[in-house]
Image (tube, rainbow, N blue to C red; front, side):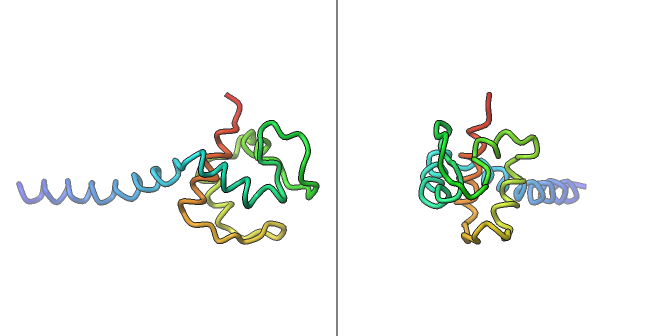
Length: 110
């Protein structure tokens, strides 16, 4: 019985660990994401919340993306890591994806 309890606890810990890592990755760093957006995304997107004009590519502003009800850390992660016709494949690392996602979500109205 004692061995069975340890096996259950160990199994629960192993199953919970990846979920914890994923949520930690999704949290991201807003300031780092802002720097990345100003470097890589500004040619196609309006990335600053106070910016009223900019890219004429038809790409949505980051503030508009943040306001979409479907925008979540997970949906941004999937979108940013999936190649799209008009969006260049930037080969973002997990950390970069998390940081840009965190910045976009920080633009959501409170």
